Structures are given as C-alpha cells and as structure tokens.
Image 1: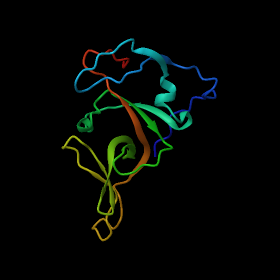
Image 2 (image 1 turned 30 degrees about the horizontal axis):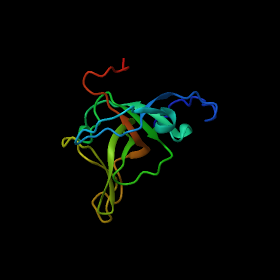
Image 3 (image 1 turned 135 degrees about the vertical axis):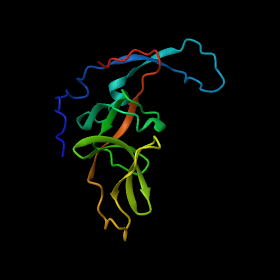
Image 4 (image 1 turned 135 degrees about the horizontal axis):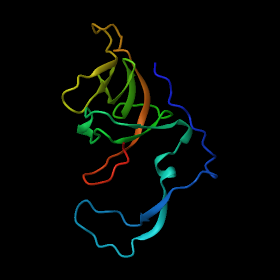
Length: 162
C-alpha cells in the first residue's frame, strides 16, 4: 500500500492564516441573467469553505481523463478528505496496483465497484456479489479517501501547474 503523503503541521483553526477573497452576496444565474447591484459585501475564507477537516485533507492533481464524464479532467486539483465515509455515488481515490486511482464508487447488486465515467476504462470490483465466480474477492483495490471538491481550470484561466 502507498504511504500517506507527508503531513504538514497545521496551526489551530483560530491561528491559521485565513485566505479571504471577495464573496458576491448574490448567486450567479446559470439560467436567465439577473442584474446585480453592489455585489461584493462579504468575504469568504477558502480554507473554511474547502477544507472542513484539515488534519484529514489532502490535495492531488488528476492525471488522465477517465473521469471526464463527471467533469474531472487531467490537471484538475482534487480536495480529498480521508475522514469521510465512502458511499456509493461518491467520487473516491483508491489504491490499485500500487498507484492512486480516481473513480466513482458504485453498487451493483450486493457488490461494490470502482467505475470510470469515460465509457472506456473497465470497472474494478471491490466486493463482488455473493455466489459470483470471484468468490467475494475484489481486484485488490483499497479505498483511500473521498473527493470533496474538484478545482477545474476553464479555458484561458491561468493554472499554477508546472
């Protein structure tokens, strides 16, 4: 199994350096446009919004496009919380064949599977159905954490990726 990424000691939440950015008090419409008045009236701390449990949170970059059907593509930044209980429907990071793997956790019958959304990558079984030819054995994958956010750079947006 892969070792955990090195833990960086974090100061207590009260002493943590806040990252405050302007927050528009009005939501942006994805349908019919709505005129906004003086819209910047508050500030938001991205540490609080994106990292609810700092001691169990890790960041990873996506390599590959197996999850593009879920809007997660090569180069995206993932926020992964290892303290979240994985449930079917969640996007998870697993360890398979000594490498990290990004997939959606799915229930098929009584089995649990890791499923890509690209329509190409084959699903991996975690726990197979009773009475199957696999006799309850999985493909050797272990769940590592649950993706709680994916930061996706849009066309023309600067990326800090090197």
